[in-house]
Length: 92
Length: 291
Figure (cartoon, each protein chain N blue to C red):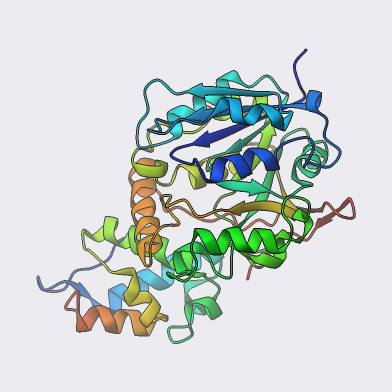
């Protein structure tokens, strides 16, 4: 799975959202288009262990470091990507 | 004559927890199990304070104690050493010897394994106390745990263990990442190559999920989740249950390790498989849980 990079400042927000949606879609075997960006991860159908696993995969794929607590504090795709933007990890 | 069932238990610095675990595996504690039915193979992975084999003689177990000669932070090689010693046609592995068993677990797993020639029999993990141990905080300590067990009159009151414990997986149909007490035929263990020694580091990292995932993905295997029995984690400062917030960090590290080794994301097993209700001797096939 590829994620486009922004101009040297990190990942683009849209690409990060799409990557996470695609990841979750693959886990729960649903189309990415059906994955809510605003619902909590557990409502979407992915539990806390699985989102922590996802963070590990993101770190490996994109050579970044992420604190799993960012997910627990922002437990939706929009919320998590927003926190990544606030932290300067993705371009806003 | 070889027993029908072998159980491999791994210990590391468990002088407090291990005696209870072994007691919980004894024929006096386990329902419908006689001494000749099974053997317990204890492999210690380098403890400074060695298990006191003589103290276990009174348990009436067919127990052998082995000190793994080349211990590493990962228990994997020690487990595989234990697996190589197993003589039973059915073999169960306790990757964490600090987990005591419910009193019907062995009989239930034996019955479950008989339901399918390539059964992967998984039991559920519990933690003694009001919360999972990595979330329990400082008010829950070994004295509190001792008091809880005394409150149900354990071991005689072992049937009440779920009342004083917290399930790692409250919904038995939920995606399952691992099982502390997993049973398969010796042939299937051999086919899988045991635990993969590529998984190094404290606790073996993601080796237990890896084993579970590989077993469930192996051709023709049938996952059977055992309801009504389980293993109950005792405090011991182990790898994945020690410290606030550390569990998530360790799971993340396990995910990264798995990704590097397997070249794909680690995925919990979402196939519900068969649910074997040990108390009623009933199998339920509820299909894949998509939730």
